[in-house]
Length: 294
Ligand code: HEM
Image (cartoon, rainbow, N blue to C red; front, side):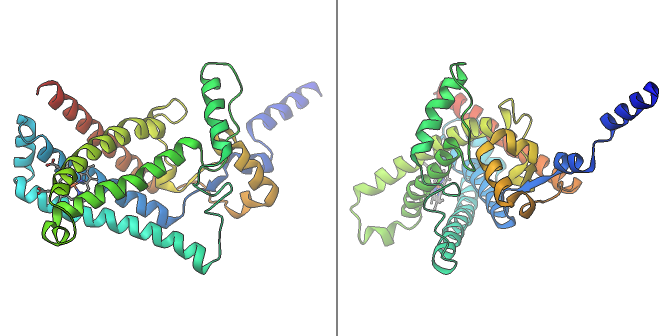
């Protein structure tokens, strides 16, 4: 009798009840296909822009000359830079177009306020302070929702970064056209701003953004969600308890049930993510080297 009960208990441990098993493997959709493709294009074009722009900025450094030579010369690098700039601007315009479509056509105003909005809200300030308290063990981990305060910071950094780097880049690209309406001294400023903003963006994306996405203990070695579009329900519950609870209450967990990502998606995602980290960190090391050996 006791042996049978023991075996039943063991079996229950090994084979969870169907409902529990379903909860364990359920993946919840976070990003749609268009968001993932846009992020992929943004990532590739940004890396390429940094890789073709930085040799110009540090054109005196030996590595920059060797790098520009490997790319086919400074002039060819400049042409690639312009092609990638068009790609990045295209990604930005598509993203803004999708937001406008949501508001104007679908009458979906959730982008302006609430949990699906990237607009900073009072809760983000409370979360920021709560998070720092948690870092030093002085309070509980904040109950994060769909977008955390640092994700909103990253998002808006790209927005104003695009205006500054894109605007100044277009001035460098089409000086005659801009000179019809702008004073000459602004072109010197544009060159300065473009280079400094590039350093800021590269420094930020390839250290802090990479840390958040890949290196922090909870994510190591890599957060796959931006490549696969979905994350395990348990991860969602742990990382964004407020979103998980809302989805659970409103039937969103079933609506967004994505199933586990395919092997192919995981392999491609790991390859793309690892390549981006390697290229990005190499660029950061080269920038530091260029500054130290000036
Ligand atoms: C998005 C729109 C962008 C446009 C339209 C643009 C355009 C340009 C143009 C026309 C030049 C001059 C190239 C030459 O002399 O052949 C340039 C230089 C440069 N770009 Fe961009 N770019 C853009 C984005 C970026 C990004 C995202 C980065 C880096 C992350 C970047 C980094 C640089 C750097 C470092 C230089 C050299 C500046 C200098 O010589 O002081 N650019 N860009």
